[in-house]
Image (cartoon, rainbow, N blue to C red; front, side, top):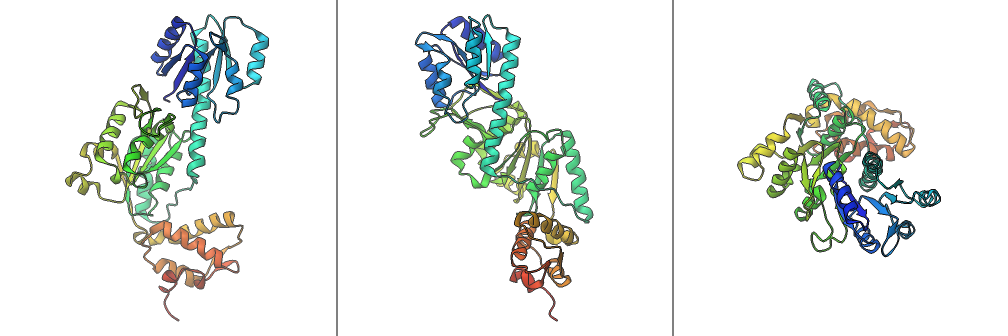
Length: 393
């Protein structure tokens, strides 16, 4: 996980020695010789973790704990003192200090303390992203079609080996659900699953979303922002509609994947990462390569395993099982008690070609359950474009 440690200490040798040790461990390090410098750095959002000396030329270090008490997501603060004042240590811990170390600092203890602080930082990053995206965990419904069983077998192998995966298929066919299946069934299951829709973000902002940026990197960048690739460290990064990614950002993504490291926009420190990339496209990348809109080297880097999810019209045998899944799902969400679907309604669902694929089927069942008066979904409860496919009496 890429983390920046802010060392607030007026002793140049202490900052340099600790900085060299932490840099060798893969951390980015910034220094401050005064309380004022450290305070300014915190306000800019530069730091993930703070090492804070107690005695500083312009004030008492622990005062920073009180000043930042109301700060949303205050970085973990580790106090360093030469005095070993137990009362002060207890007071500091009560006021939110993450840990307390005495000089001379034992580097192995420092490393352990920062690793524990890193766990807090990683948890916060993931929770912040989940709050924003409100992602829902859906199981992958295979159904009875042989083609989907083959897709699932390959997906399982890709999950176990933690390799890059390229998923192709029409819009709404379940590419993200398959990506979540890969995440849930591999060694990264306990780590983040971060999804980014490349088509939904302006090209000018996509690089910043992926890699993050440092304060002052561009106009309006007042505080440092953690990129989604960094948030996904140790887990899975799902790049949906990757065909929409500009060619210059494709080059930067390829470099990051090959080097397992990247720089934030406006930054100089290399951030080491370990992510499994699952990319998805509803457009033929081979055609885009010929047109010069997609890099061939990135294409082959992504498609270590190539999975194609067929449209629902080619796997209609799976519709009954999908309908059952959605009824159970929406019963829980809506507080309904729908337990059945009439033969005519199911026949209409099977006859319809579903241009919007599984997403459209899900929406149709959700709507039907809202209009359903009893325990059984009837033909009249379905959307008109679906119900009119039923054979007339």
